[in-house]
Amino acid sequence: MNECAECGRPLTKDEIALTKKLINRGAEKFFCLTCLAKSFSVSEELLKEKIEQFKRMGCTLFL
Ligand SMILES: [Zn+2]
Image (tube, rainbow, N blue to C red; front, side, top):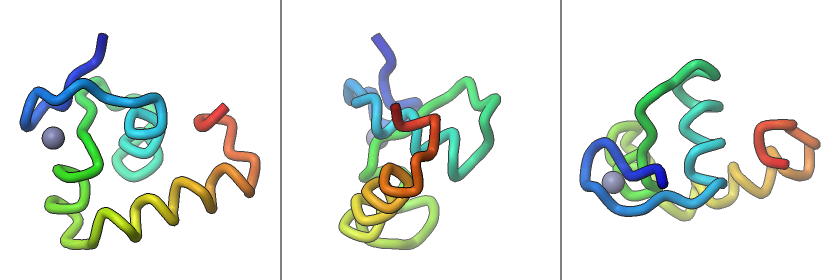
């Protein structure tokens, strides 16, 4: 089970995929939406929209 490297919260597949997408594909540490939002200074809502957008684009990380 993967946990957020920052706060220890259990991660969803989407959060892991989004970490890879935003940081890099080889990332070994993953972050939850809250911590990703903080480190990129954006809202969690925006990140959720991004996830939906990547899914619509057929990004293979989100399958
Ligand atoms: Zn976190």
